[in-house]
Image 1 (cartoon, protein in one colour):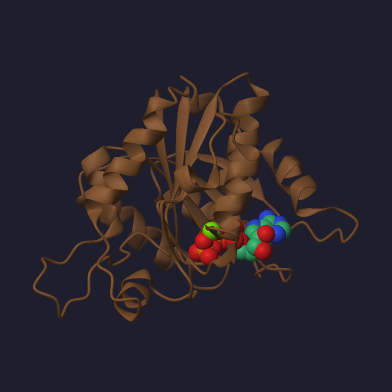
Image 2 (image 1 turned 30 degrees about the vertical axis):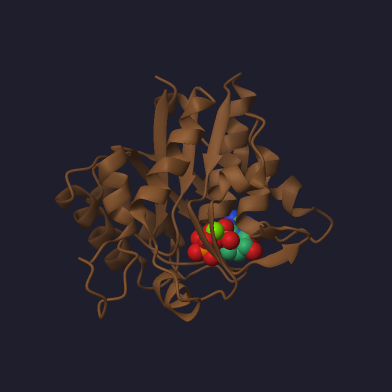
Length: 239
Ligand SMILES: Nc1ncnc2c1ncn2[C@@H]1O[C@H](COP(=O)(O)OP(=O)(O)OP(=O)(O)O)[C@@H](O)[C@H]1O
Ligand SMILES: [Mg+2]
C-alpha cells in the first residue's frame, strides 16, 4: 500500500485536478485507488450531507467504493482558512479525527491512497489564541508518514514557492518523491520552459508530468482530467 499526499505551492494550484488525474492514471494501470480530503472549506448542503466540490470529484474518480463522507470527514461552510472557519463555527479541528478518517481509508486496502491537502504545505489547523499547541496539516502527513507529491502552479513566483515548500517538507523529515508542473491559469506564464528547466535543476526529485492548461470549452472537466491522466508518468509511483 502506497500513501501519497498531494500538496502544492498554493491554493488553486491544481491539487484536485492533479490528484484526480493521478487517480485515473493509476486506475488505468489496473490499480485500486482510495482518496482522502481530510479538510474542506467551502461546502454546500445536499440533504444531510455537506458537499465539497474537491471531495465530490475525488470520490467520482476513485475506485475503492468510498462515499463522500468517508473521503471528506471535516467540512466547513465558508471557503476560508480552515482554522478560521472552525473558529467561526465554534469548533476545534482535531488531528485525531483526521487520523481516524485516514484509518478508515486504509481499511479499503487499496494499492494506493491519495490524500489531497488544503492550501499549501504549512496549513494551520489551530487558532493560535486557543490553549492548544499549534498544529498544521503537515503534522498529519508526518504522523501518517506519507510520501509527498508537489504540484507547482507555473506562474511568476513559483520558483521561490516551490523551493521553500520542498525545503519545508524535507525539514519535516518527509520525502517529496515527485513534482508536477501545472499551468492552472488560461494565461501561461512568460518563459514557462526556462522556469521548468530551473526547477528541474533545483529540485532533486523527478518531474512526473508537465500539464498545460486545458482550454477546450468543448471538453468537460472530467474529460480534461482524463486527458491529463495520460500525461502523468506513474511508473515511479507503483514500484
Ligand atoms: N491544467 C489545467 N487545465 C485546466 N484547468 C485546470 C488545470 N489545473 C487546474 N485547473 C482548474 O483550475 C482551478 C483550480 O484547480 P484545483 O481546484 O485543482 O486547485 P487546488 O489546488 O485543488 O485548489 P484548493 O486549494 O482550493 O483545493 C480548477 O477550476 C481546476 O479545474
Ligand atoms: Mg482542491
